[in-house]
Image (cartoon, rainbow, N blue to C red; front, top):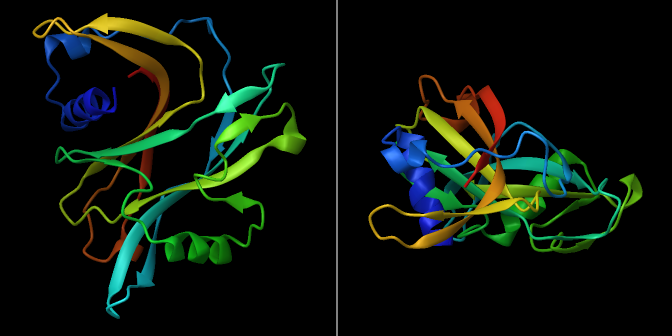
Length: 203
């Protein structure tokens, strides 16, 4: 499933959409399953000094998830970032633990938990809301747009048959955030990040 998702993500990010991507089903107008409340911060860069003494750049996005569905839910977040150059990254991979620690210090938020620490049963109500952060390596200087896909917020799913392989894949209702990176700068701290859209898709 993850392999197909990353492929779809890359196609959508680059704009090379085949007919079956266009034919992918849309989420139900009226939600057919539970949906967790989700708020998030703006993606921003952060620098750390690696074990070799060099500066390494990462990007991160803080978020908060609240269960207002009327029933305890299992929260299994999966956040993927895709770029217009065709690359797709599952957040959290190849990210040293020191990056998270530095983000906590910068955000001055003692409630901020790692992406692994928020996995599990999510109890109902604001008092049990969880705050975490998606982290990924710096994407380079040729990116003009990035899309962030957050899965695990909704229970809505649909099966789809791929036209060529005839294989069935399970698509999940996923929140997509699209950001423009105009004039991508070689210095991440100077990079403008402009939000373009936020909507639900099946992915």
